[in-house]
Image (cartoon, rainbow, N blue to C red; front, side, top):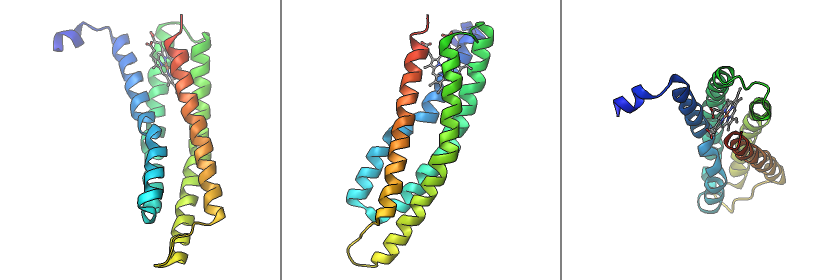
Length: 164
Ligand code: HEM
């Protein structure tokens, strides 16, 4: 195994790091809809915790991973003289849009959703749990932007993989 790694060019190792960062940054985000749907159905009192977990993942894994994706991608584009290629320009745009939406929408909206869920659970007391229209609207915004981000990640992987 050591011989296999030693035989690889540094460029290929950086490409592997680029792809690893994509997996680490975005992999878990594709599970969010399942996590939230099951929590809402079976354990609604844990929804504030789920929002806290998702927001922490967005901050640490998604934002942190994006920096590595960008740094490794920049090295690959420089070494491969591909800065002017469509897929690289697209990748840069994707990193900017993802970073902006995660920082300006997903993280603050996730915090807001947690606060609203806590408020609604407190108001429900030990009785039937009723989540407010306000909470549901905030969750819908999280779902809409989350789906957009997932689609953008998949499209970007497609463009990176089919580059000439
Ligand atoms: C969300 C953003 C990104 C995703 C999901 C992504 C994903 C990927 C994947 C999966 C590959 C492997 C494709 C293959 O080898 O067939 C790849 C290759 C590559 N990426 Fe990205 N990438 C992103 C952003 C960027 C950025 C911002 C840059 C440049 C600044 C970049 C530059 C490259 C280059 C040059 C390659 C080709 C390496 C080669 O095949 O020799 N990527 N990317």
